Length: 366
Image 1 (cartoon, rainbow, N blue to C red):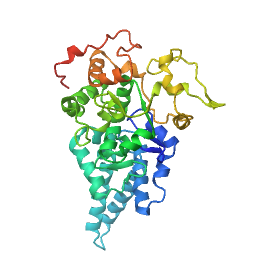
Image 2: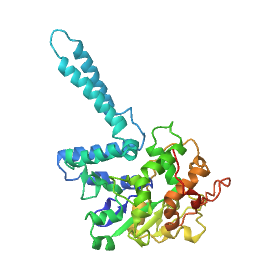
Image 3: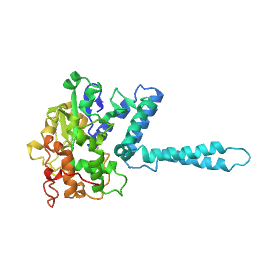
Image 4: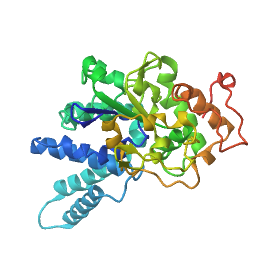
């Protein structure tokens, strides 16, 4: 939930809803490191570099860090062969250290592992908060990471509860959130958090339902210690009191961003393309009021924003679904459909029935 403009425009960053592109477009990473100590700059830059790297790969192998680890590993092996001077202890330390460091950066400190394996997520939160002494957080722009999780993914309610924003500021400042069709968002969550391309979408959805989403499903728990930010329903980011009290003033659907093209003579220009990822039609007034009625500050922040984090998919997102996965996703995120007025029926797939929540009372086994 970073400030796009300090004390002027507050952005509630719902995961996998174009928020990273908006942060980059408004130069939040650059603003966050201004006037910081060298050590703070280093760790914040490291955080943003890793954040960008994980947008490209679930398990990043071909990285500068791994290249450095490989170099240290080779030097260690070379020192181990020298007979005249005993470098054995140093060589073994270099070999083991480079291997451990590489494994952690490639397979442990990555989105799928942190999100879906609770002990590792908890250890990571402790590590960045206490061992790294909160060097990866920037409270001025509310971004980075500490024991509360990823600050740029805090819900509006968490922001108030933690005291990062006062109730008075929240009620008066311009605030913005981007949401998207829950079915499309689940495919994006899959692409970002899967254990590699070999994991089927159905297996991902089932384990998400039974493990990742379990604490929220059973108790409504939203702390990162129990429920990762990616699993929290979208309405929890923008509303309070079970979706009845809207905290964020401007809520824009990702599917509608394509209609906002440019500003000329203080008017908004719209695309006339009726197609969209979520099935919205620009000819229907109810589908573009959130674009047409945007405050100027919000409109200016969105204009020209690229969508940089699209993962390559083998087929359109709606082709990933069968009836079982459709039902499970609807059960988990049915409130998002209601609050943001998304149709529960997947229009692009006439072969699939309307999800029946009543048939989902029994537990789904992976």
